[in-house]
Length: 220
Image 1 (tube, rainbow, N blue to C red):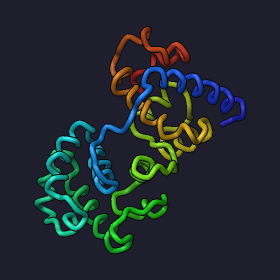
Image 2 (cartoon, rainbow, N blue to C red):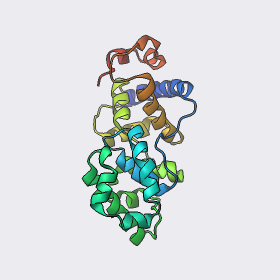
Image 3 (cartoon, rainbow, N blue to C red):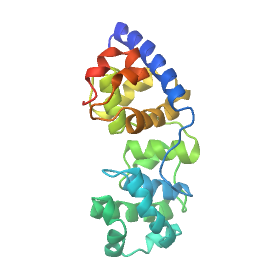
Image 4 (cartoon, helix red, strand yellow):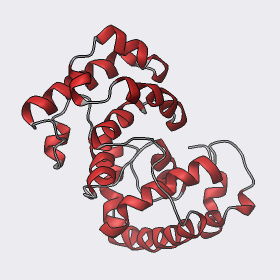
């Protein structure tokens, strides 16, 4: 982006982030988990599924598979049925069980704590790695770009791209690193609870007042 556009977007995102903090002063990931490994499983299951739906699945799953060894010894067909409701259950089963074996054999049963090592695990793309590193270990390695983030960025003209990787690069230029983790949570909450993808009363949306063109772009 040009220097002028960068300056404009930095000023805009600062105002938007300030408004988001007022709307959602306390935000956190809505997936339930009790260990870094369970978080990784939950995040993988959340692809093409809702957090609410995943929490219903993991409520039983995490009671059945309590340790990493349980995943390593799991029967694939049985595991597929256990996570069936999440969608894409065959791919998710293959990736999760393969990741469990790699974590056990290569990393002594502990999830790695670097982006390259996380990305080497089966089924782990940058979004999953960023979430797990941030939430489980407090390691800020990037900004999670999901469907909520993509829609937010397009509505408020914060990037010229639709590709998550290029959007993330733009957001990392626009925001100070200390804001990366919580910004993601806030725009997810904004998309879920304040600004749905369908028509709504934008006159009551404090973020739209900051950038009025967003009133016409709730579907992007």
